[in-house]
Length: 279
Image (cartoon, rainbow, N blue to C red):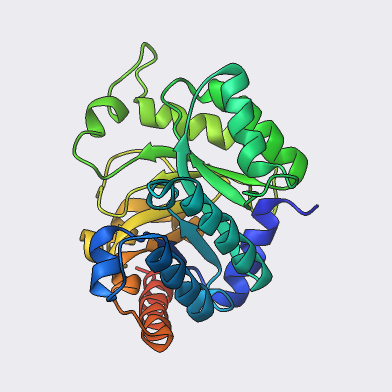
């Protein structure tokens, strides 16, 4: 199987540099006039797939909003993943898993092994038990052509106390994560399969992202306060590797499929302009 980095590079070249989240939280379901139950969840996801599955490069379901409905919600997630794959989108499951030993290996099997009903192209992961603790995820991803996006610099206010803390070698925790992911991508062309999550609203942090060699997922755009223009300040010379991610800014344009498409086209145009801008 082709590597995730290769597939992502091709998908963004064809469909544009955009990831759209599927975050069916109660307020959004209500805004769409849908009940806060599995029926509403199903109708919501079916509409998003219809509107965006065949035109957006990456779609990012947030697992928690499905899990809150128990087994039936997970069933909707599995169905949504299958539909998105059938429509040609890459699926990035936002689960932020992180653990050690056999447990992280089980997470890897659940999401990155093609035999699993929840098999996706890539997942998000938390490295704060040590990047090395995620080795089973990296190994499973490499075996099956998957990807892993590791949290590095998040935009929540609590994150900086951990991510900006410095170790004995003087590097911040975030820079250590960045450097270890860069090592995993060494030599990969055209793009490595191991990426980082860096919030679009973190501003200039002084961290070096130039040698990561993999994709840089940038959530926090749109309703969360970030704009496409902010990407230049955050990513600087690594701009070419950025995958901008929107959720509520696009989803809020529902409940019609045409509204979702129009919103996705608009933010994609903003992203293209920002990522192509030169000084």
